[in-house]
Length: 149
Image (cartoon, rainbow, N blue to C red; front, side):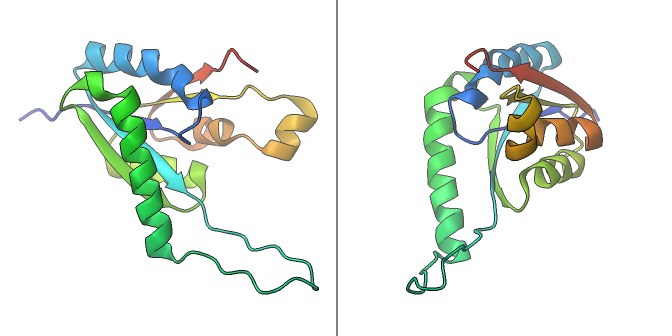
C-alpha cells in the first residue's frame, strides 16, 4: 500500500517564509503530496541586567498555545487553497534541528523553505537555519531565496 508523500514547509510566520509558497504548491501538486506546515517555537532566553527586576516568562503551555494560534492564522491566510492536504505542527527547540527531526520522523519526501539569503557579517550574526537544514536533512531540500533582501 503506497503512502502519501509528505512535503515539510517550515515557517517562522514572516513575510520571508511566504516566498516558498508557490514552490510548496508546485511540488505538492507534482508529487500528490500532503503539506506539513511546521512552526518551531524556540526556547526563551532570559537576558537581564543585574539591576533589573525579575522577568516573568510565559510557561511552556502558554508558548505552545500562542504558537498554535499563530500557525493556525498563518495556514488559514496562506494555505487554505491546499484543501485537506495540510497538516499543522508546532514543535519546540532549535529551528534547524527540529525541522530536520520532523522531516525524518514523517519520512518527508522534501523540505521546501525560504531563506533570507544573508551573506558575510549578517549571516555570521543572524545564522542560517536554511543552510543548516541543507546540510543535515534526510531528504531533498528546496531553498527559495526571498527577493526582498
